[in-house]
Image (cartoon, rainbow, N blue to C red; front, side, top):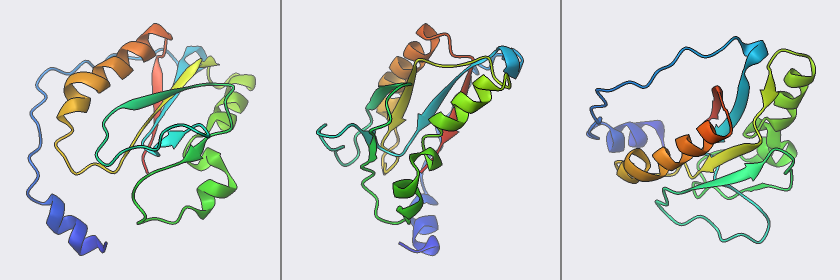
Length: 149
């Protein structure tokens, strides 16, 4: 899909009004717990492939490395991701930052959503996004590194 086609398809999308910000001032990076949230549609081998328009999320432990991208869109070059999962899931880089003291610690769990969504994302705003945020809070996460795909 060309840039012009993407602009045309998205130009008329409604932008939801989100009047209540939940912004908080995070601690200094050296004291912060950091998690990854990606829209790469990551999955473990053998897991059910993401469905079209699926707005759920999947959790992965920090120790998990055997993850694959199952993003439904074919409109991007996957070669970098295949060569190094850290392109979309920079878990090794976070662990290096924690070992160097640049961040406090790596969160115990990280999340993946499927980024190929044509909908309003109402389910994410009203259900799964809230559940994801709750899980991150339970894990003591202060900062989230977003890796969009």
